Image (cartoon, rainbow, N blue to C red; front, side, top):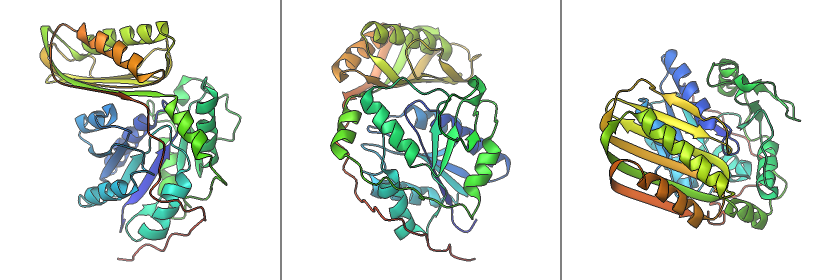
Length: 351
């Protein structure tokens, strides 16, 4: 490929975007291609970035706002990755973002088609409609409306009950549908940004995002007795789920990554009371030193999330160092650019 293909995958919190992108990167590596990832969040310190890097993948992080509000940083991150000559750059916007066609796809096509071939915009949805508040449902509906390609994720979890026609049924766990989807997004004939939201109520958008409390936590652990990563993550996730449920905080996404010299574990859940999805080495042996990262998005006040998480990590056996905890509501979205006109990418340069 003369220039890298930029593949954006959107979808609501917990849809399985990161798991799909990591699986896609592995599949591309199996062909001898060099993939790269760009992760995105309202704050720094992402479980997803650490998970990708722990698996040896080339990854950048755009923090402090969504891609639309940090458009210049997205371009800079893609430029830094381009120095490593990746064939494909996989990018994941924040899971609560909408209006991405006008604020990201159209500007990319208009001004950066000579640097990146923009793939059709994929939106990933869970197989079952999530139980969402009215505000979150507004975000979800608008995400679906922008999709060039609409995919159902987690197809290994049972039949789909979605009311829209689905282009691809995918399972990042089993690999089902991943290659057909990759062929579609990497096809040079594929068209990106073919759909535009006619208008977006940015007041309602900001209110819906602000209904979610966001929390990012990181610490170095020195445990006594020594534990393996599953014995750190399992009880911690179970306690957090129970405490959040008791407090009436509806989980949108809870992710925990624990890394030790003996291995790493990532666990996540997308709703209260569900079984977590586990990635990593369940057989890793015990170690005293661990690096713990936790991301929580829930419909609750940030102060409540802070109290619950701080109490749970305080009960871990041993000492904590280099500890950071951010709990907040997202600021109102303020895109760098809005181009509410369908544009056409220039032809890529020839070699």
